[in-house]
Amino acid sequence: MVIEKQPSCDDPIEPALLPVAVALARMQQAVTPVSESKRVPLRESLDHVLAIDIVSPIQVPAYTNSAMDGYAISSVDLPVDDKEVSLKVRGTAWAGKPAEASIKPGEAVRIMTGGMMPEGADTVVIQEHVQVDGEHILIDNTTSAGRNVRQAGEDINTGDVVLTAGTMINPAELGMIASLGIDTVEVKRRLKVAFFSTGDELRTLESHAGKPLGPGEIFDSNRHTLFALLSRLGVELIDFGVVPDTEAATKDAIVKASQAADLVITSGGVSAGQADFVSQSIAELGELTFWKLAMRPGRPLACGVVNNCRFFGLPGNPVAVMVTFYEFVQPTIKAMMGCTTTELQLFKVKAKEAIRKIPGRIEYQRGIIEITDDGDQTVRTTGKQGAGRLSSMCLANCLIVLPADCDGVVPGDMLTVRPFFGLV
Image (cartoon, rainbow, N blue to C red; front, side, top):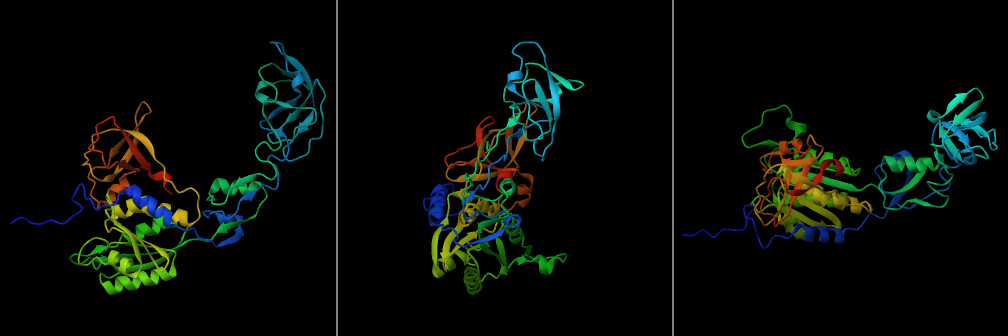
């Protein structure tokens, strides 16, 4: 008797699986950014998304100033040959104070970095290139006209759009806004994200930390992983804990979470087992956009909408949770926040070792980028790639992205990698 087998995660090619690129495009097209915004003090805007453009009320720099410690001179005094020129020093220009002296040809002013350029000066000779002789200095022709001077407004002019709506406020943006004298900004409200784990076998740290586990029991790690991943995105978290493996409990949690949040994320219960109710519940309560993807790990990934709330049902395996979060959930969250840049970083690195791969699905293998003695970058895997090996994510510093049609890798091949340091 021949067993009639159903499609499974072991199949390299399954016609019913949705390609990752198609799923990503479908998902992005369905996202609607939050519309509500609020005005907050500048420091509270970190990790928020700008709701309106930042327009500069001033020019930066506000005045022409020196970029170096040295001597402000007129470029007409620069020698055109190997001879030296002696200039009389007429005072000092300090940073933060008006220029007290003007100069004529044959004169110089001692100037500090940030000091206002005195009238008549257009060049700064750095102090290391000057020989001091009492009240005079000697200069040569090693400095060109206009060097070491920051012109007023050369960075930003009054009325310039400095940052556009949809920009995530990171440390650099925060400092830029402060440099314009702006102390409050209009930002999109924080996204509300609810999350929970499913599984009768799960035990929480809240109730079982330090206690022995019973037969078949495991600690719930995925909820803590999701907490960490979401915290770095600056969203408002709503933790629904662990939900039992029953249809009624799953539906109840989905409904309550969808009423409280803009986005709901679950882990576990999305496969085809008799105790897996997440995908079925999403379809019955709302709309299931897609479920099975042509990727490894992460084949069972449910995406849908319940009560106008976006929904992601992630797999239960710890590595699959992280991979699907990086590839699908994080870009969706950024798009819902109103962020105009949601793409993740990718670059090419040379393979250090052979990697086995069967064509059919895109694979995300845990990798370690290393720098060789001659300065080149190479990547190798962390070893065995089981989706339950959370320790492999701790060893890795990137994901190796192997295309669906890839049939293996040999040393020296150029591979696409997604570094972890660029993900959040």
